[in-house]
Every structure is written in structure tokens, then in C-alpha cells.
Length: 113
Length: 114
Image (cartoon, chains in turn brown, yellow):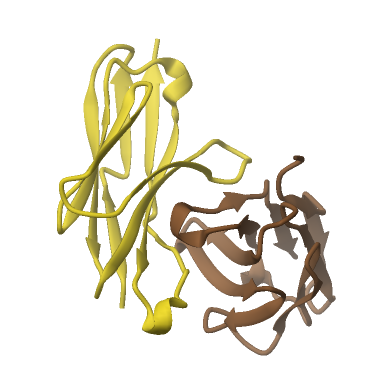
């Protein structure tokens, strides 16, 4: 299996622009997680899905952030409008049995200037 | 609120010099404690899950242990390729067993010099 695939690997955008991050989970994994990593705050959960349904979105910072999972093999995290404080590495992870751990993707490094 | 504190923030060892990393946690009910390794520019890589106090797990030069308040990651005779950031995370029991969120510590940056 190719693992969890995220795109793009790097994104540089101007403040106010819309940004869309993409994730393809491991086939058969029913759980999908979006995390954000910064030096100050470490890894923080933004939202997670089970069987394409959002279960916990309490970590989504504000209405500028939205996430969707239209099918079992694809999820997006959208930021509109983007701000410099959104600069971070965004990770997607998937799991078959979350109690046994997740598999993370390589992340998308977002820079908002 | 679940909390995870890792110490030290950074650790520099000579090759072959054994040491331990600490992870202290506060959680209402522990479903599992997880250790991950993260290399620069990559996502965290799963190492271990521990579920109950007294449990131990080993993988090559790494051994993880768990008590009711903390976990240790022991590194025996480390090699330069063990250099990475080691992350600890907890998963709490949730209402209806539906809480699968991982709460992470900020990690320990381990550097092993040859």
C-alpha cells in the first residue's frame, strides 16, 4: 500500500486566498484524522471522520476552516480566507482500529504570506 | 482536559549511551498511550501502544513502560539513526467509546552523535 497520501507537499499563498489540502487514506481505513503541527502548540487535532461522517470537529479553529469527506478514499481541508497565523504543517492520518494507532501522511507545509 | 508533558525537550547522547525519555499525562480515563517517532519533514511513525499500568513493549533498542501517571521510553545503546523527535500521545475513554482523538505532547528531540 502507498500509505496515506497528501497533496500538495508545500503550499505558499497570500493572505486572503483560499487554500485546499487533500488527503487519500489507506484503503479500508474507516477513520480519517486531520492534525495541525506548529512549534508553539505541537500536534493538534482539527477534525476526524468515521465512515465519511464528521465525528469531532471541536478542534477546528474557526469558521474559516472546513473539512469534507465525500467518499472513503478522499478528504479535503479548506481554509477560506487564509491568514498568516494558519501557517503550519497539516497532517492527515487514517486508521482501521484507532485504539491501535494511526498512520500519518507526510504532511502539507502551508505558508501564508 | 487531557494533558501530556514530555521531558526533556531535547537530549543529546553519544552513540552507545543509554537514557530515558519521560511522558507525564493527565487523562480522565486512559484508553491507550502511544509513542511515535518523527523524522524531519515527515509524518509521525507509530512505535508502540500501551494500555495498562505495568505493561512494557520493546522494539530493537527501544522499550516503553507505563505507570498510572507516566510513561518512559528507554533507549539502550543508541545509534545515530535513532536521532529523531519522539512524541507521546494519550487516547482517553470517551462517552460511548467514540472518542478516538490523540492528545500529543510536544516531543523530545533526540540527537545521537557518532
